[in-house]
Image (cartoon, helix red, strand yellow):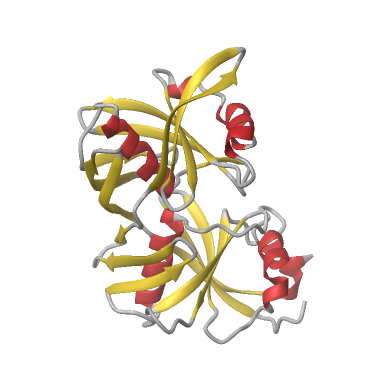
Length: 279
């Protein structure tokens, strides 16, 4: 790879989802090398380690644009937790003001950064609602729902969320014929309070349970409201212990408008990668 090292980066965490964020307005990594670069630097124990890689680039229609790569090098249209980290990074580095917009493959995202580490996103409208889907899990037919909340998400409600084998069941649903060819993320949801739910997510591209998923929290909160379990705003407890807040206007259809995701986006450390990060 034709990369000039050392390469400056920031490690960030959005409710337990961790990311490598790079100011890429002056192109540092050739586009054809970016998927492999993402795969290598996102390896845990052998490199920086992260759920994903975020490259901030110039935009003609917004404050900036981003390229988002999952830890396996695949491209994701959107990532709610990653988007909050990108927004706080842009604000901290003077790339954008506290109110900003940026381009993603899912559309233009609006963000507002608070004085603390909290970031609020206005999400693109969810689409492709599907309910009553049937999948065999543990020799039993179980019912799922589906929506694209920026990326595809299947949602499964359970009374025993902590007992669910998230990695095993998540992999089955993620590759199920119902959701091909793109596949889907998979959320296991339990109501825990009047307006609160707990969500565990198997993430496509990471191919494992992650500590949080912003778009998954959005999908789960909306279906919990459709099912009459909660109403907006919905508090979502994540596997990592942080809490996300989802706000939306639920319409007939089903349909959701004015969807917002709010939660922490923390700067963990800054550093410089050497060429040995790719070994």
